[in-house]
Image (cartoon, rainbow over all chains, first blue to last red; front, side, top):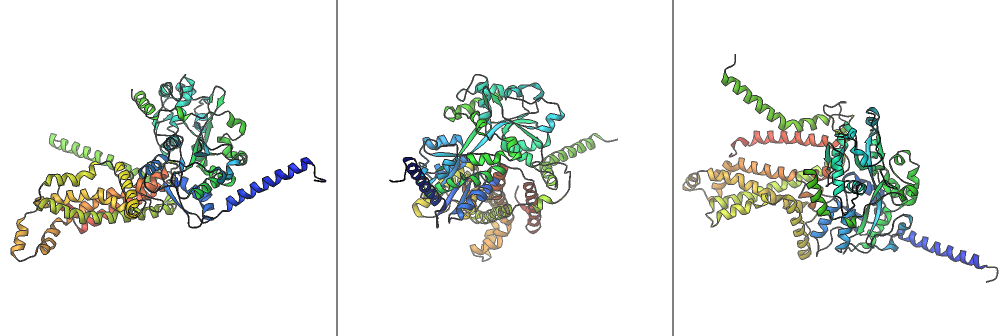
Length: 358
Length: 271
């Protein structure tokens, strides 16, 4: 080993290891899947179109034929349950936090092949319970009409509890139990009042004290009322603030504080359905979704925060996106994420209805 | 000076007018808002900036979905009519034992929530595929079969009601005059029950065309029906082109009903 120091040897070894890893990752990125039909369970509408544009089209260039199965995760989960014992109708699908737990506990998901998802290393997340990987974050908080706040000289709330101020009465909407934003909003209120995910009742009472004009179920309905000015603020998510701002409304987004925390984020997941014959192509789809370019392009119109670190860095320089979203590592480290393992969904729903109708 | 009778009548008319306006108000709001070129993320009524922007911007996926909905609902209503007429003839004229049970059996699809029907059909299709290799899930034929299931009771109902009121002596007269049973059906029975068949087909078509809960389980990205496509879109975004396509469909429905009324005469349907 003349002329070769221990340090240079180690460096050379590490470099060759990195090159080998990079070559393997690159090979994974380029592998073709001719004659493979991949069925992907996704939300429909514009969401599906964006996935096709920024993710699906890349896979199609590698020979995959993609068939989308449109539907929300609960509906697509129902389709998989209906098919139990027969061939699976979906290979890979989007999964919301509640369904992730149900699907994992009941054996509906394959183990994720980490070796086939090299882009996972570019993200700030890891595989959850071996079965699913988060692919974006929804940032929940208080969305408000900035122009109406200014015109009516309304104080800006800092916490969800501030919305109990009578100046907001009948100008607010609160998410009903069928809306995904209901759960984190109630959790934050519960935590502020001595409750928790397993004891949400204090959150229900706090929500009722806000005296909202109504409890919204559909995002579109709230978008309509907010555009018309009937509602000036609501616990909602940054994506809708961004989309309304893109449509010309003057919107603001507050990431509410809770003790030393600021902001609430919910992860949505991708998982490979148990029994699929296309596990490798499904992993390639997940890998593509975690790719930096795909994450940036998807996040911009859809208003979600990427899990890919470099994608977040790129979006941080976007003046519109950064106005509504927390993107820096420091900010994200201070956010709260609710613990779905503690939630008893059925009990929660029944108790919410009792409180609201009582 | 109005008499008490005249006043009562006018109040009655005013009440009926109010009810009618209330019923058609959503249609008026949707149609008018679709012509507001300035609106985005909101349906504005009355419209502020008149124009056809949202009609020009109806995305191709809506036209494709409209084609799927129209094809599936049309084929299903024709099949429902064929099967429904046979079932109604059997129930009314067949002198079969347990006719009341048969009536309940054919009414059953109306009593099952459509979302349950959707899940059950999906499960059935998966089983069929596993056992016989026949693929119906997420296909157009699969949608049509399910629509026939929910549409047939309407045809059985309307045609059955008409047959109950049909004088059986007309058939007997045709037989005495030498008509075969086949010819009697086509020359005597069919012309009389035709409006009820059309009415049943219309109901079957409307139910299939506007369905979401059943279709959401049976459609795929290649065969997404229009209501499911709109439902999926509205989960994330509101785009006024939804109002434009809805207005076009409402207009087409009114024109179609008018044409059917002129050609067949729906006034003859038993009430």
